Length: 548
Figure 1 (cartoon, rainbow, N blue to C red):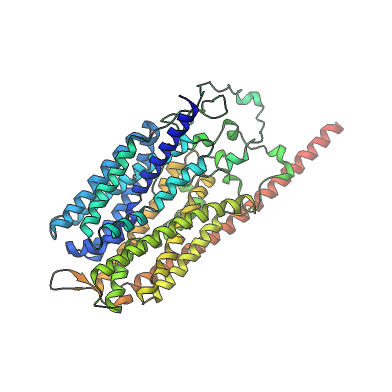
Figure 2: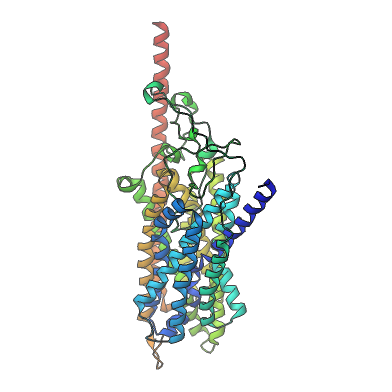
C-alpha cells in the first residue's frame, strides 16, 4: 500500500480513537442527572451516591483485565465489548427512570452503573493503544488527542443534552445509552493498527552471557526513552510490558502489530542496559530530586513486592486521599446545586436548576482537562530542566484541593459555586496529569499496568468512603415530601459537614506529599554521597595498580 494511503489510514484510525475516547468519559457526567434520577426513583442521597461510586468502581477495577485483553487480542475486540457494555449499562438505567419508583432495586442500578464503567475502560484502553501504535514516532502528540477527548466527554454530552433535550433527564439517559455505544460501534470499523512500511521481523542480536561481560555496568545510551512518560486516566491500565525483545524494522522502528505493547515500544534494548556507575563518575545524573530507583526502565517492582516499599504506601495514601476528595465533589455537585438554589431562590424552576447542574459538570470537565495538560507539561519541565521532583505538581494539586474545600465551606450563593467546581476539577486534573508518570518512574515501567491498577484501588476505597459521608450528611438534613421524594432546603447546611472532613483529608494528603518529597531528597543525597565515595575509591585503586 502506498505511503500516502497508509498515512491517511492512520489519520482515520486516530480520529476513530478520539471519538471512542470521547464516548468513554461519561462516568463523570453522572452528577448532571443524579438528582433527577434520585427524585424520580425516590432514592436517598446515599443511594444516589452509591450508584455513581459503582460506575467509578467498574472503571477502576476493570483496568487490569481490560489491559490484558487489549494487549493480547488487539484494540478492536475491546472496542466492540466497550460499545456493548455502554449500551447494556445505560439503557436499563434509562428504562428504570421511565418506569419510576420501585422498578429497579438500588443493587441492580449499581450493577448496571458498574457495567458502564467497565465499558468505558475497555473502549478507552483500545483507543489509547491504537493511537500510540499507529504513530510510534509521535506517540505523545497522538495519544494527547484521545486523552483530551476523554477529559472533555462529560462537557460534550452535558452540552449536547442541554441543547437538544433541555430539562429532559429521560432523553439525556437515552442519549448516553444510544449515543455513546453508537459512536464506539461505528468507530470500531475504522480503529485498526496500520503496519509500519517496510517492516520485517528481524531477530535481535544475541547478547553475550553475563559472565562474558565480566559483570561490567554499561551506560544507557538513550535518556529520552528513560524519561518518557505514559499519560493514563485513572482506572485504565493499558498493558503489561512483555519481557520479549522488540522486533526491529529497517528504519529503526519496531514492528507494530495488533498485540504490540504500548509501553514496550518506548524502550529500546539499549535502554534496558544497567546503569554505568563507573563511567558516570562524579558527573552522575543523580540529584536531589531523583532517587536512583526513579529511572523506571531499570527496575521492576510489582505484586506483593510493592507492599514492602515505603514509597508505595506513601503514594497510595496520597492518591487515595486526594482522589476521594475530588470524587466527592464530582459525584455530588448536582446535589449541592439543588441545595443552594432551594434556599437562595425556592421558586426557581426545576428546569433552570438542571441547566445549572449541567453547567457545573461542564466546568468540572473543562478544568480537569486543563489541569491534566498543564500538570503533564509542567512536570516534564520541572523534571528535565530544573531537576525537581514531579511530586511538586501533586503538591500544587493538594493546595488546590485545600482551597476548594475552604470555598465549599463558605459559598452560600449558588452563583459563586463555580469557584468550587472549577478549582476542584483543575486540582483533580493536575493530580492525574503527573501521578501515572511518578508511579512508572518509582516502581518501573515494566510492571506499570499492574502497579497503576493497584494504586487506583486507593481511589476505589476513598471514593466510596467520601461519597457515603456526603450522602449520609445530606440525608440527615433532608425531609420526605408528600410525593415520597427527599429534599433539603437548608442550603449550605445540607452538606457543609462533609467538606470539613475533606478539608482535613486534603491537608493530610498535602502533608504526606511534602514528607515524601523531603524523604526523596534525603535518600538522593545519601546515594550521591555513596557514589562519590565509590568514585574516589575506584580512583585510589587505579593509582595503586599503576604504582604496582
